[in-house]
Image 1 (cartoon, rainbow, N blue to C red):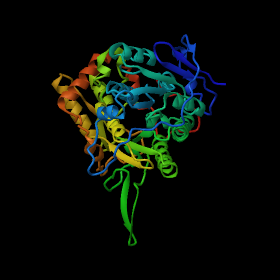
Image 2: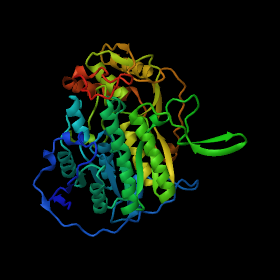
Image 3: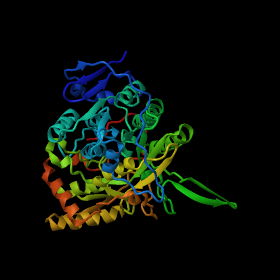
Image 4: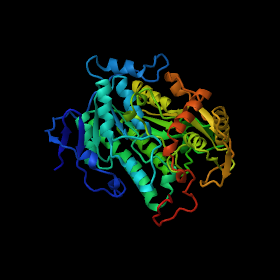
Length: 472
């Protein structure tokens, strides 16, 4: 029988986890942080679901609510409860702090496997990051706000069920997936792990909502990579087509470009189906490429610092370029450099999630928001970083290297992204001052850079069934 535990004073909870298929990767993590002195506590009886605060959704006469307004409307004495799955990761940690700071009652669910990936591959964050336990302790000491912590694997449905019954979320923000395309393309085992972890984990979240929190609003982090790079405009989730004299509105075609992106496509299909079949309310946030590291909350103390990845497996383009410029490494442009994507500041990631929570989908509704603020090609980003580096006295070079991915290097790209703007998103656009800040941040920590991790080491075409260790 599984037993729930609570650490006094800090609201850390953990549930023992039975072995799961493909759990070998998760088992690599250091478990010392969860083996603290625990005090057993009995579980309270929980009702089968929580009634979410009612709110008009997407009507033309509706005035969108900010996250803070929605939290207070939910109840003057009981803040809206938000479960952040994957809350120890890059986007999840910043979001958890932001929502807590805005008055939401927050719980983090995480198996800490992202830290294990670093151990596997010999990688490290540019920024020093402390344990999740120290993070939430520091947050409480600074703000007097408690973030509950459930350590376990959402692929273990019994663990996830206990977390849902214990916390009773009004909204579940789901970041808890393996989020790197290169990682999913290292070898067969990583491809299988990515699809199993992401698809089964999301299925478990959907079943947990159905069984224990029927009114819970699922806010799921998707990716713009689901769409690929079609030679037509990319709509927000759906497209109206006339064919042989008949017209219908259908899901926008998906052209995923890695086993990671394919897992996100499978997630979207499963979520859409359960909205139709079970009446689940869900918002799929198809996010572009995120850059930056600081939010108002993570800047409050060094123990609240977010991770900053610059390597060829987990690092995103602009973050990688800033680190490369800081250490005098040529900017690594893959192929022709015309690859164009949507980008956004991490401060806008947390703002978008808050807006989605504050203006929830209706029961049975599957919404798709394209979550980005600007479009850039890789060459355009390289030119911006070069110019910003010159102002700081850095001699920045750009080097075209063979593209390790299978993708179009020159293409049309025009993606719509109006729905979050209509809900009140005020974007932080990429500016000279922001680039200056990112470069100075990279310079501050350049002694922590392992230059051996800068060049890509994963090839889409060369991956095979044999397990491999990425060269370090």
